[in-house]
Structure formats: C-alpha cells, structure tokens
Length: 559
Image 1 (cartoon, rainbow, N blue to C red):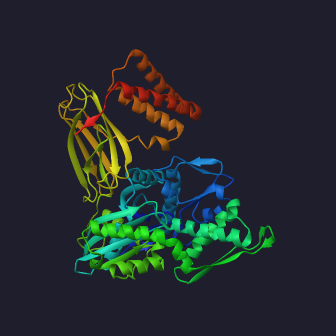
Image 2: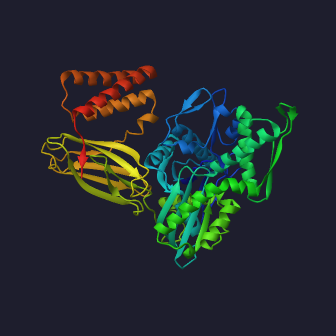
C-alpha cells in the first residue's frame, strides 16, 4: 500500500491530502478541520502546541507563540517561545509531524514519505531547511514541489478531458508568499514556461496594514494604544485577519473588543471597516503582485489577453480587488471550480500518487516539466559571477564549466556558490563555499578544474568539482548560512570539520597545526559534555583560525 502523502506547508495554514481512488482527498485534522493553523506555542509546562490550540494560546500569551515560522526557514538562527529557544526547522517539523499523525489516525496506517510544496521563489537554503524539517518530523521527502505548479496540476486533473492546449496563469497569493506562474497545459501534460514571485509578500502583510490602520483609530477614537498592551495587540491582529476574510464576501466588517479599560474607564470599542478602506490599504501590495504577473507573462512571451485559464491559489486571492484587477489585465475570470485554499494540497497529493505509481489508469501519460526558480553559479576572482544554471531552465538541469587558478602553484581552490534573482546579478544569496584541495601545482591559468552544477526536479542543488589533471574530486559541503542556524556544540563541530578540510590546502607551521588540533579536540570535548559555553568559545576561536588559514592560502578561482 502506498505511503506517500501530499502536504501544503503554508505560512498561515497547512493541509494534508491523499489520493482516494481517482480524487485527491483533503485529510481532516484531529478537530475535524480541513486546515491546520501553522501556529506554535509553548505552555508553562514546556509542552509545544501546534495548530488551533497554539493560536488560541497566542491571544493569552503572545510571547510564548509564533505565527508564520515558514518565513524564517533558511533565514534565522533561532526563535524564542517563552523562556526556550527553538530552531525554525524544529518548529516547522512540529507542524509537519502533527499533519503526519493526524493523517495516520485518519487513514489507519503509518506514513513515511511526503511531497511538500514551497513557494516557487524559495531559495536553496530555504528548500534545504524544509528538507531538514521533514526529516526531523519522521518523513522522507520524496519531492519538494513548487506551489503554483501543484495548483496547475490539480486543475489539470479536474479538467483532464480538455484536449486543446491551453495557456494557464496561476496567481498564488498565500499567507506569507506570492508566486505567479505561466504554464502550457494539454490534457495530462503540463509545462511551466516562467515563474516569478516574492517570498516577503503575503496575506500577513495585508493583516498588518489593516492592524496599523485600526490601531490608529483606537488611539484617536478611544484613547487606547494597542501597541502598549501585547495582549490587546495580538487580539486586534487576530480580529483584523478575520475582518479581512469577511470583507471578501461583505461590504463591511466590525472589529469589536468589549470591556477594555481606558482613560475614561471601562469601554467597549467597536469599529466599522468598509471594504473600500481595506482596498485602499491593500492596493500597494496587490499592485506589487500584479507587477510580477505582468513580468511573468512578458518573460514567457505571452500576451495577457492570450491567457486561456486563470487559476487562483491561496486565501488572499479571494479578495475581490484581486479578481477585478486580474480580469482587467487578462480579460479572463478565474476558474470557479478551484478552491484556492485547497488546490495546492490536492496537487501535492496527485504528485505523491504519481511518484508512488498509483495514479488511476483513467489519466494516462500524466507528466509535467518545472523550471529552475533562480540562476545558480560561482563567484570568481574580483567579485564577478559566472552562471552555470540559468533561471527558467527546465528541470532537471545540468551545467558544467572549466575554471582555473589565479596564482602560481595554488594548492586548493574555494568556490563560492551563489544564486541570484536574474541575469542582472540582483538579489545575491550565498548557498555555500566549496573547497577543492589537492589540485595540480602549476602556474596560474594552467590547472583545469571542472565544476558541475545539477538541479533536480525539486529545485535542489548539488555541486561537484574535479581537477582534470590530478583527479582530485570533491562534492559540495555547504556551511555558509548554515552554521548560524546550528547550536553552539553543532557549530563548533561544523567549524572544526571545515578547518581540518581547509588546512589540507595550506602550508602550516607546527604552531598553527598544534592550534588546529587543540581546537578540534576542544570541539569534540564540548560535544561529549554538551557544554554550550565551552562550545561557543571554541567556535569563536575556530572562526579566527579559519581567517588565518584563508590569509595563508590563496583559493581564488577564475573562468
């Protein structure tokens, strides 16, 4: 029996889905709800709550809770809940673990593998953080799938009898991120043409804008400052989110907080929020999304009026202003058969069934091709950038190029792996630094170093380097942007391993070699004793040693 589930790991809510016969089924959680809030909170007893319970506790104790941990993956070292620090990967794992347990309870058997969706613009460090979170949740990640691609697959499944080729625009406005994707779809075959997005644009920003406006009205009309009371602030933010949702189907909503003590005694503040005012606040954010829609249509070579189908995904895509602006741009109304909140999870379930070989025979020849979300390459001597895999190349993708040294008799090369938003070089993100020791000793420009980048269907990067003369070969070892997310003990061990590796490419005197061995021994000792203070001191010393190693051994590279 198949054991692969589809998970839409969202910023605001997460869903789990399963192929039940020939239809994707949204699996309810232990409360019977189809969506689980991606909220976490720590109780006074030390229990980590996930879902609705955590969201409820957030109102009573804001400092012990967090909403939107997805935005922190691959970007932040730790999160404090109450008196405890957590890695974002552990918090994300707690959400995934709950989805897994709820699905097992519903289906009646153990689940071990999953397809998990992420925004198309998620960076390599963010995708690796999702993979790590899945591992910590007890799930083998069969594939990381782009959210708009999953949405397009779900729609293709529901209208699989459409024989003509269609140009499909997916507008994915979720809680924390935005993506726009253009696809060619014919029957069971989907081909992504282009994708654009912003991983810092989402429904949470609309909530915050409405909150700021409402808080000003509280101060002006009731002389009550929500910012001065963290409990009132969290409650008001929650009420603004609910008002935003209500305004998608009504012309006005009420935000009311009874029994508040203000300068004039106990009050019962109540504010009427009109849809027109909310749209004024939301317009700058929605215009940002429309600019990306126009950009993705242009990069795919499509005229807006040539769109055959418009697919909405994500709760914020229900905002009437979004629909009207998209209709004005494309002349097309959104597909009414799509549930924006559930379509991504449904697509993940379909892909899970495809990987498991259990798709019904009623949908033969099912296939799709996704694209690389960003350009990947190497930083070379002088700060230049050489792309090896370019944005919008079909996945899986492979890029190769031969590089060489910049100094005579250089014994190692260090390659800085970068990803950028586009060919203009904007939005540089450090993926990692890759060291290749043992290269042939020769004059500058003579060694031939083959570097190979490979990107799988989940947009995950692997790097390999080989000296074509000496045969020395090394696989990538990412540590930049990763050490900052480790515990003190893990960071000390990681830096010790890196120092040993980099020492292979440098001429070290006996004193420096002795210092290296002492620090590596100290890192191991602090690990055995679980001594974070000693490990933190060791890590600081190791960072100084690495700077010394870099100064003694040129490791620059050029094309």
